[in-house]
Length: 409
Image: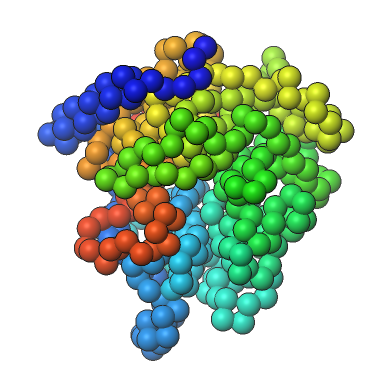
């Protein structure tokens, strides 16, 4: 199978995407992604007015520098990851209620688990430094990936597990060693959770120096890492455009998704590079075997699924085995039923007005799939030097009815 997207195909798909976008904005469709919440700037439930004023004065809070990277839904609450890409980000993990009293536009975000854990004024390594993503398992344990590290970072990346059903108590924490992810520039980007054999997390290391997939065993409280050429950026997939901004970075493995439990065989882990169109998978049976992963023979088990019509960031699989993935330059979301041929994959919906950088996904318990569209490429590419003060909506949580649940169920 051809592993690259042709110029002609790209042009046709962009035309298709624009057409769909125009049609979808004329009226609501049963297959559309509808905006549920939106923000121009992110603001928080400050302890009091004096604290807020002091944060603004000292530039501990610079409104235009705050961005969203990940969302997860649990029991009528959205948990939100906000990486400290630039200065002036006082909260890296927060939440909003989905009650009827929460406004749909500019809802204030509360810090999770509290202000103290997010406050880096007196920086100790038990604080949440830079959260990029998280996952919530079926038992209500939120696996928080505090794994985005700048060259100036003081603490190594870590994984922290909070019990959402027990006052957000920390039930486990693991600090990643330097050979897994560097404390100076490592980028643990996204994760999925496997509840079998004592619990595992599979994590993408998006750092350009040593990209790969990290395996963490909760039972062993131990991690290991695999590396393969399929996890590298694809040179011919660079220079794609999203909202008039050219993405010219060689960004390695990023998106990750896990198939649901399968009584007839092991689960499959799907992954792709951000700068890339090819989708790959590997059996979790291989990943769980630390001895097998220590050699090179495991690489024969990497399967090339196919070439997507465009580059992707976030991905997710539902409990029926349907994979959903963003299509960044097409301003849309694609899907593929993993029980069939990848040739049957298609575009679910596209909208170039509301779906700018389709990133993180999450399911609720009522059959809805939620999508975070967040413009985040502008923050990373410019280090917040773009005109983020312009008053336009930058972050949207959209919803789409699938009638299914997360892969965790």
